[in-house]
Image (cartoon, rainbow, N blue to C red; front, side, top):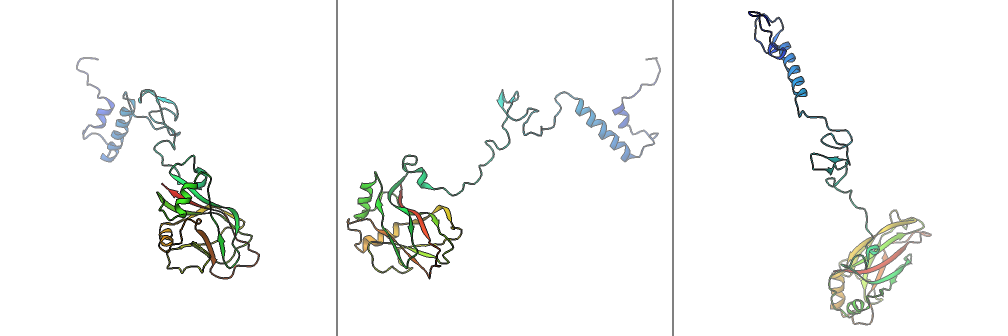
Length: 250
């Protein structure tokens, strides 16, 4: 550099100069200044890098060890932080009794059980290994847990065109009214031709309490399920239950 020679300003400094001799308009100077700052930041050590498109971080692809995390693998999309998809209908019979000790199968009626008549009485039999619990229930002793009735795998040759009322009864008398605690609810056969997998659950605590009050649980046998159509069943529809189970959630 020659003594007395003018000192050349760095490019970024000239861009920020307020000299009146700069012919650029202020907006133009600001745009050039911004571009220069971005270039300086990109060239600086430790500058940020864009996240990889495959779901990794710190420039490391998903599933590869990350030096930032001490060698831990970078989780791929849909990992621990992603909530699982909602579960579909669960058939509790598949997890019982060995896989789910909190659910006890007390009694069952294997099917298919045709229910196309004016009324159908379905007898329940004690399940293997649950004879003690079934005897207690038949004698009117409250179960140790929440009793429920599961109606599995409705099926039909064609839509029956009618709902079916379900009752828990101790004999073969007239079905109770809808306001009676022994009325469990109703089922429909929408989408059940030829079969609708899954089950419907009906709580039994109130019905069993009513049977005890009436003296219809005397130890002679388990209560039965009574099904009554609310109207005429379509000819040839052949509605049926896949199976029926009485369980206790402990």
